Length: 168
Image (tube, rainbow, N blue to C red; front, side, top):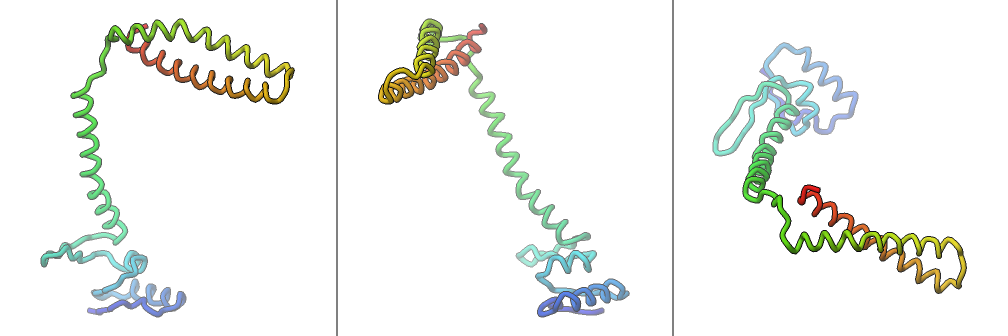
C-alpha cells in the first residue's frame, strides 16, 4: 500500500507526467489525498467521499463524474419546484375565454382607430419623403411618426390579444 499526501504540489509538468505514468503502471493499492482533480481523474478508480457528521461514502468512478452527479442532484429539487409552480399556476388561473363588456368596447374602438392611425403614418412618411419644408418641420414630422408607430404597435398587440380571446 502506498500513501501519498498532495503528491502533485511543487511538481513541474514533465515530473507530474512521469509520476502519473508510474502510478498507473504500479500494481498496488494507493491512498491519495489531493486537491488536484485532474490528477485524481487520471489515477483514481474509487473515491472515499467524506459527507460530514462522520459519514464516508464510497464512490466508484472519477471525481468529475461525482461532481456532475452532485450538481445534477442539487439542481433537481429546483427544477421540480419550478415545474410544480407552473402546474399550480396553470390550474389556479385559467385564461378567461370571454371578453368583458369593457374589453368588447375597447376592441371596437381599436378597430375604428387603427385605420386612421395607419393613414396618418402613411401621410407622415410621404411628407418626409418629399423633403419639403425646413429641418424644424422635418423633426416634428419625425417625432410624430415615431409616436404614431409606437401607438400603432401598442394597439396592434392589444387588438391581437383581445381578438384571440374573443375567438375572431
